[in-house]
Length: 219
Image (cartoon, rainbow, N blue to C red; front, side, top):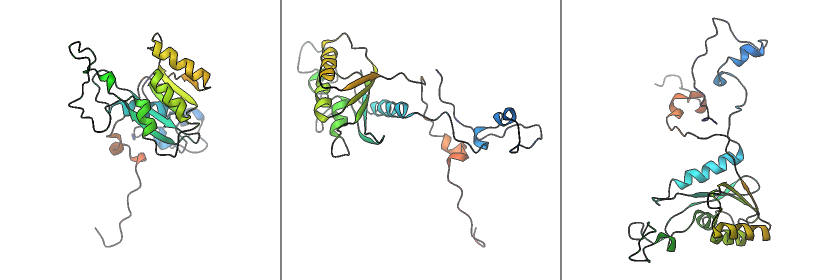
């Protein structure tokens, strides 16, 4: 798997020959994608796009150990909810614990306080409900999140990793999903990485709007 290629706005060498409609496919293939009036073929598929959104939202998490994001999508491929793991509203990130191995004080354990990405995505919904939607998440949901997913009416779970498959919480989640007829399947990415380069908007002129015409007599 390879990174997504980015279209560069660079001139293509043609040895002085012009490229017309009657050129051979071999010669047309040499032309830069930015110089051809055809649709891109390396665009993100829906599943890849939504899983990437889940991963991007995870970057908002302040958990030093695990960052997870979730993205809820309706049948029209519209995003209706995004969330990531974090402390409840009003609970200071600086005062509540982020560790999980404080043997001296069992209250200082993040698992007692942190809201998972799935919960936050459901609660952050921008629609009346998320019934019959699907949720994209990096890790297979735990049993507590599975309850929320089922009760919210979400019908499909798309996950990336099942590394906690050996845990009872994951086994319980799968048991509930199967009983409630919630479909779940593992997403296999087409690309190992998706690079976001904020600077490309400056050098790729094809991705920008045309310049505003200058009126006569004005500078």
